[in-house]
Image 1 (spheres, rainbow, N blue to C red):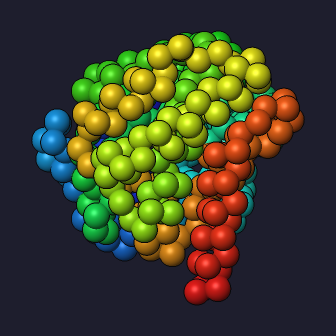
Image 2 (tube, helix red, strand yellow):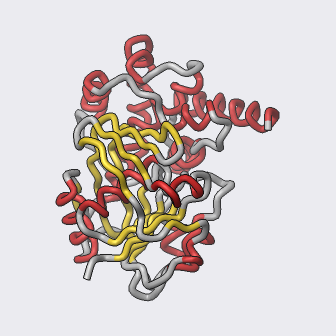
Length: 309
């Protein structure tokens, strides 16, 4: 029997990876709020530079997880990590004793909320290394990359994680299982903590423009994340900053997810990506002046959005 998978938060990331799992033979349903009417009628259109174009019609299209019919083998939580959203309430109605909870989300030190709420379930932390945007209702543009890293909390690899990796590999996307997923989260934060806020603070510059104009600043922020991660017990590769700089020069000029949220007056993942890292640094007595300045300026941007709401 095919695996039953429910994607909660079927935006660009959830819609894209849900579509891949369906291609691999899984039975994929989605909780889709903003694009519900369109997706219910037409499904998703995926346009990928690497994988081609195809339509994905979910098995069930729902407004709420409580409407799901059946027992989910996996729940993929692909929402933003923002204070306005109760991640536990979103998925609790559909989590059964056999359900593995997978969260493909940005940020560091975001695991405890889910692990604490579902102590008897497998919790799989996921990271997406991808350039992917929702450009119209139900239409997703996959621009580059797509590699996933999955690992169980607190730090092992289960058979369910291996099975999910196999499904993604079968769909055409590389998926790596990791017993050090928390360290992997800090690795991704090296890029996110620099480019996400700077794209907003610069007034909308693309990643390449930011790098060409302010590589020294980008490197300073990245280096501070590396120091904080090490102080928290997660030593990153010595060349991690250079690797991130090189990969950004190589990727297509890209609007970050935080910039897209800002331009659409949506809540941004400031706390998950910046605030949590900064607080971890303060806890470990690591000076991070560049990160602290960027965080403070982003809080002012959030205040501006609040005034405009």
